[in-house]
Image (cartoon, rainbow, N blue to C red; front, top):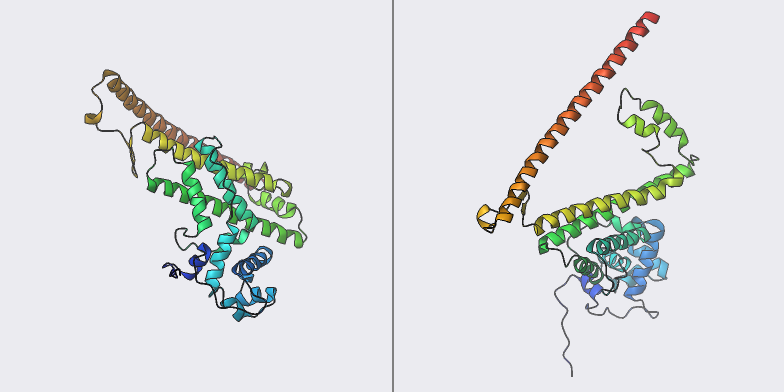
Length: 330
């Protein structure tokens, strides 16, 4: 006779997600299941948002009483955790597929973004800690697989994961909210948004907004409805590529032997450098290049400062002449 294995010391919802929780008491004649309850809750959230989900609403959609649900899921918090787990089902690609770490991480981020797009309410669930449910941990494991060849510490890999998931989450929430705002505008009769755009362009004058005004006039500030989806994808890709550029730059510094700290890169101490003429010459060349770069950056900052001062002076001259002309006319 086999011994009954006690439940692990996990919160009830997490134990349910892992399938190691004790079975509920037998419910009504037409028995429910955790899967049916979670699927019903996700369906409601997909249609009406997370705020529409309640134990009573889910029970009613299944044709049962609220108390029937509590025999399976003991709280709404547990239900939401299980909903997040159920909606986070991503397809992990075969490890045999050869690709660079950037290609692998890009595929990983896009898979997360697609999950957010399929279930926009996920971004409304507060973050309460590190992932501890199986599907979410599968996503973490997939990411670590894609960056396994990089010379990053475990902490740096997890920091990169947090950065990328935060980016996907934030941009997905923004995309969802903008789509809702566009739908509300259409319902109000403003299908294209041309009316307010034209008015806004009139208000954003070169005198008050010298740098924003030309962008606004060229149509680069707000995309038209027909281009909104394409621009959202382009904006997302641009941001993602810059994040990956940053990680790649950091990796390059690590591979070159630099000591990287929060304050910036530090060259390895001279005593640690091999007593090799080529290495010494390369180190000297690097120091000279770094000095030249700092000087060039200083010159660039000064040039920008002077250019801005000239533009300000020219605007003031134009405004002065316009005031004088106005006074003469009056």
